[in-house]
Amino acid sequence: MDCLFCTIASGAAPAEVVHADAELVAFLDTRPVFKGHVLLVPRQHVVTLPDLPAPLRDGFLEVAQRLASAMVSGLGAQGSFVAMNNTVSQSVPHLHLHVVPRTKGDGLRGFFWPRTTYANEADRAAYGERIRSALG
Image (cartoon, rainbow, N blue to C red; front, side):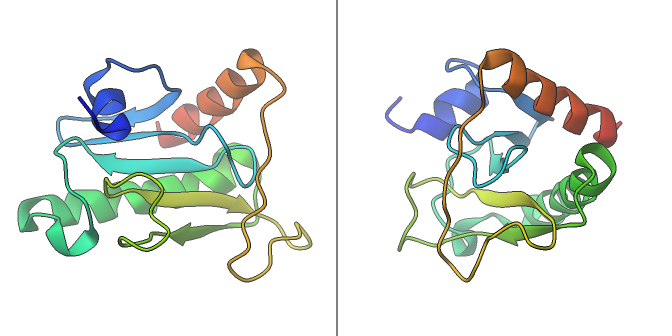
């Protein structure tokens, strides 16, 4: 497979998965804006939002809503930033929705997305567990 997100969705590439069902997978971004930054992708290879098949739309939005809530209940964020690019600035050509935990004064301004890292795999896994727990 040439698509990184397809390999993650199939389980062939490692990722800290926080949600998985028959149609969608959500996992921690390896270069998060803030710790807990999640990417939601359809398992089916879809490049942009206009390409998303109608039967996947409601489920995609429902999981996005749950992830946005998990940023607050699971990570203690005050809210979230939810965004997606279509073609331009799309680092992986597979539809992905960013769900980023936010707090007032966190330094995120406009569309400049500074990136951070996890201290180690245990730190990353702990954030994943907190989000999975909040999702129920």
